[in-house]
Length: 306
Image (tube, rainbow, N blue to C red):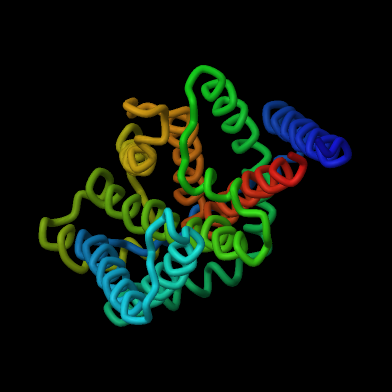
């Protein structure tokens, strides 16, 4: 074992834990309220058509990419070359995200421009919220996941593949997918489209035509979510359940419940709350990137010390 690497890992974990305790102390005592001052803002409204379009574009991109790759003589079998599969996934998801954003812009350009201006105007203040949110929510989630992992074995194909790669040329495509592509695409889908659609369903209660097809963005874009009580949290819980449900099967063989199911559900609630409070996806995307980046870094350092 490489003891210096293990020592650095231990020091980094203790440092993050100490900062998390300090952040929670400040939060609970009310000191430094400016660190987590959130303001509600306008949000893009989404319909079921947006979700179906996103899934359709992704499916078409994957089909086209698979055809092109096979014509070039490649083999995407995980047993043959897992890195090639992840590299293709990176390009496929990135292209699909760009095409879907073009679709949204084409169907409602004014609200997209308004939302982009809001993201740009609050970008640096949202970076502060990313740091605060990461320290508040990610360490407790990782602790809970570690406790559950001590009782249940953990099987995640992406992380297992990452542990087996020993050169940066091979793990770089996988790191790009995990740290950058996955957070952006998942937050667009779950905290953007899905949460936005559940918000309209449970809070705004629009007409069936507006709920299924392109909605009227005027009042929604100016005022954001206006509902109160359980309906506000119902949309967050519903989208979080779907997010956690996609991770079913990462547990021991033959079991649907893995050690990351409950922690990811709780994290999704926190990310949904941050999106609801700001009306922007920047905090959720940033926190998700930091979580995945921390996980990948610890895995790579742990693999290098073995």
